[in-house]
Structure formats: structure tokens, C-alpha cells
Image (cartoon, rainbow, N blue to C red; front, side, top):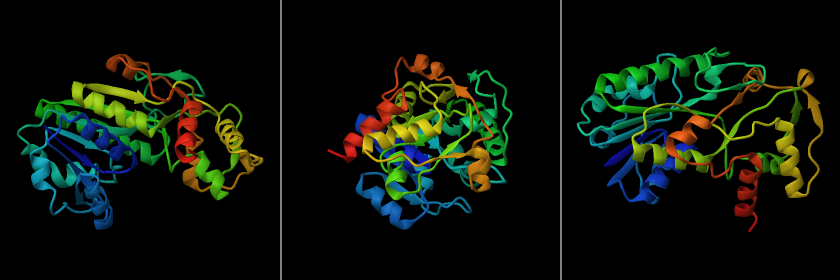
Length: 290
């Protein structure tokens, strides 16, 4: 078996390393946007190719065509998913293709006023980014059906992990406790994404699943908790209405929901490594403050 990732970023690299550790794959490769990043990943034993999503990657064809498992984590553009736009012929030529995986987002659901939802909830996205995700999900379902292969769609919550957590923003002095009464978000630790992807690949899981933590929480509580662990004062609370934000930052607050992860845990017979932000932050703190 051989695996290929379109977009070897934070989450995908965690998944690639998990799959590599399993010993089940002869080769694991993927794409990055720069030659420098490609070289860094090659040192880790991954076959990395440059692909910026605007034109076909000049070197990735042979690795993609020999792949049995392909994972897509590049955000779709106006014209659709870059992998499907520029490398459909290579995918078509992958004779041993067994399984596809697409990283989507819980943003496809839109706003539910803080209510609990699962995968049966209607999709009412509130911004163009999430509209594109809905279209990309369906494009990959159509392709998987056409090829007769199984497809896992993982709708990811807010991703955090070592180097990308509340601790980093507190240390940089850029953390802000913006308070919108009743607002909650799900989160997911990058190691849980890596583990679930690897398990889903091994099982050739088929279907659409949410991947978030067990306890959606207000963002200001997470910041206060992290500040307490660091022994620093949390930043002052700022009312959402008066907070200075970019349109992108403000758009995240238009969606308020509690997303259930029961389906993916049942499908794989697992519990999360980090079921809440408390366990996730504790692990990051222990890793960065030995």
C-alpha cells in the first residue's frame, strides 16, 4: 500500500507520520507549497512534491498513480478542489486505489444557536469558505462513487496542538478574550486527527463524520485555563460587539453549535486521546515545559 496527501500541513503531517509508524505502507508522499518545506519533510521520510494548487504539480504524478490511499486537505478555491482540477487524470490512473479521505470543516453546518447537532443536521453554511467546502464534499462523493472506492469525509473542528495553541498566543501577547454570551466552539487536537485518519485508512472507513472534542467550550474559558497553567494573568475580557476583528475573525462567531463526535467514535471503536481542551492543553504544556 502507498499513501498520498494533497496538502502536507499541520494535520496531514500528523496523519502521515501515524500511518508511517504503522509499517503498513511502502511509501507515503504528498504535496507542499515550497521546495524548502518539501526538503524538511523528506528528512522525515516522506516523499514530498511541490504543488501550489494553481497548476499541475510537475513531479507528483508517478507517486499519485501508485497510491492506494489518498487524503485531501487543501482548501477549495472558486473553481473547486485543486487536486480534482489538476490531477484527476492521475487519480483515474491509480489502479490500486482503495480509499479516499477529505478533510472538511464543521463550518458546513452553519449556526444552530448553541444546540447539539450530529451528521444528520442540515447544511446551512454562513460564508463563502464553507459554501465551497459543501461543494467539494459532494465532488469527492461523486468521484468516489464513480471509481467504486470508499471515502471518509472528516468534518474537523478548530485544530490545535504543539506550536498552535492558546499557549503560543499568550506567550506572544496576541491572545484576546473576546466574549460573546452563549458562544461555544468545538476543538480537536492534531494528534487525534492523525490517529483517526490512520485508523480510518486501515479500516477503509466509508461515510461522513464529525471530528471534534467531547466538550465544546467558550473561547474565553480556554484562554483563562491556559493562562492559569502558565501562571500568568489572562488578558482582559472584551465584548464581542466592540472587539476589533478582521472580517475573517468575526465570521467564526456567526456559527454557534455543539457538534457531536459520537459517530466516528462508534465507527472506529475508540475514545479520543484528548476528549476536552483540558487534557489537550495539559499534554502540550508537558511537552513544551518538561
